[in-house]
Image 1 (cartoon, one colour):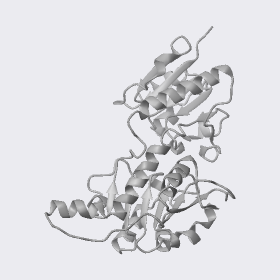
Image 2: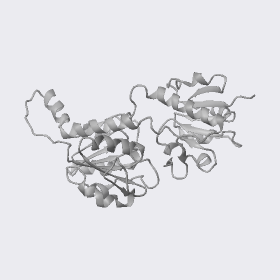
Image 3: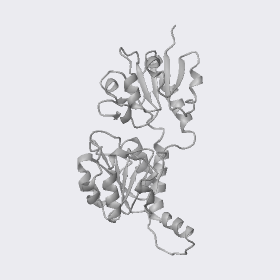
Image 4: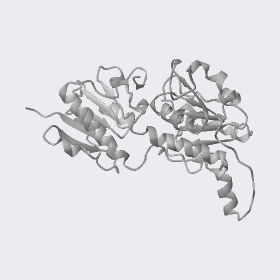
Length: 323
């Protein structure tokens, strides 16, 4: 029996995806780094696992005719992977939904505590050796608006709700009952909701509808002094509009894990804002996350071999996981 050929597309400096050795005897595994030799490799691939999203190279190397029967992304977001030959095909795509939910939720909680307790101010005064007593805020009874009420958004809402916060969400469609949220509104209701939120948290995927969603008008509608947290995708936020909202004091601050341009250039003005926390697209990368990704793929591979429905299917036309 011919074993299925699995190609794992990795960055040049990325270690092997762990856990795949358990598929010995069930598949032929090739962990491929970089873009060299990619085209002939894809032409001999049945299952493609993508960790390195170099979309231009992937699109150029995409085989025709295409032998690939399943594509798995080791991320929750798949926007970068939706190249036309894949998006417009009937090849099933799955993602890593569930792996990053708790880590991102804890990151968001930490970010909210950072601003509520003015930890950035504490660190600044500590470096200046200044004793500055201030009053800070409680998170209890504060309001949070989670833009993107998917699995990550629900985990964020569950954690914040446990602290006594009033948490509402937005999704493609309104939901009547969701235990994680006080209410879930349709995305089109977002402008009317922004003015009441002390914290606005972006967990949405990048789609045609969410790209540039947070622009000059959106920031103007936010509550004065509100804090923005973006753990979704960088392109959901217009960076120039964000800088303006920070400069004029309308926003109280921002915690940003994702950016329109990554890595964020060393000379970017965001680095210098005292009320901005920056992290390197790592909100969900808690220790053990790579092993969890490998185990998740192995579980799905075994389902694929048995002809069972795959976990975490992606709607390739909409560009995010099916719910």
